[in-house]
Image 1: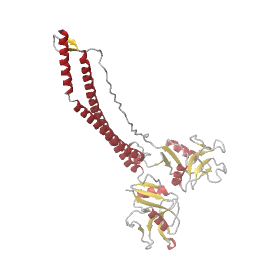
Image 2: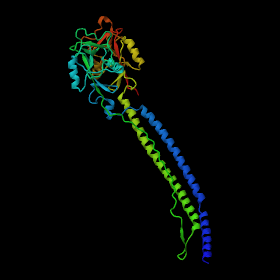
Image 3: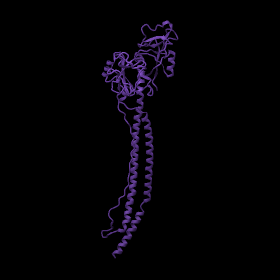
Image 4: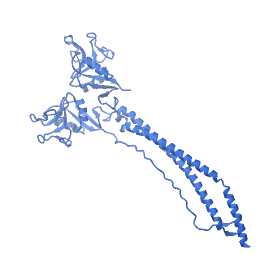
Length: 437
């Protein structure tokens, strides 16, 4: 009797459990799971595409961007925003003296500036110094005072395995010549250490070390695990009176709960994956946008570091304009044409500040300026049309005098004052132009 009752109970429970379970919307859950996985895949593709595009843009910006420095003023004047005594070139600052002195005093003057006489170790540095010291002599940190013929750089760097640029036939120690200087042509020459020369002191430019931007990709590995229940028996208690083991129901219960757990677990993981990917996408987009803005700002600031163009150092900046100082001589008319080829014109001087700047760059040489009375004797005119009579002038004493009635073009004389000379005279020339847009 009891056995028949158990079989009836078992049959009733089996039919009820199976029917209830099969009525569950398993199909809809599977569809929802597939849609979620598909949505996650779409988000993955969008995120990767966006990240790839932003990474490409950032790479281009990083390639073009300059290295950051300390503050806006240091971008414009890397050697010190408070003074224009020092000139910047290739990571170093150079001081070019305005007074002549002997080699020993020049060395001591550089030491006062926390520097040493210049040590030249490459052709680019030699070329830069040649453009700034042309037609004058400047001490450098090279000497054989300790032992004749054994030349040494004052910073201890190797002379014999390094760069040299002596004049032909030099050094020749013609009468106890133990110190080296840059000759008027830019080549090296040995001379008496008591000789009076200008001198050059270098320093490393101040600024931050390079800051590198790294784009690191992160991979999140998600694992799905299924753990079986412990034990091999399941007890069902439908009533307080009947508590019998339902061994046959174990299959249905275990299949129902494990399958539901797997379906809902995958569904939850799919939504979690979508949220993670969306968060990563938004976070990376914000980060990339911030870095892009920073690099755009650095590109703008690089224009301030080299206002006249970062690709060429032959133009010098002063007071909102760019200036070119020729390395070859020409007549006044030829100089005017050569300036025009550079989209500029011969320099016009309207104030003392510009005059002082030009004097510092043209000392001991003559340079054409854009002033002439070739159209009408005695009626001097600036080539830009600005009034000559009511503006700044700095003629040498007794000039202009139109010597032998042939002097119709003006130039800056060795001392920096103006002088009139024949227009077919051979002189260096200075061109000017506005800042590039």
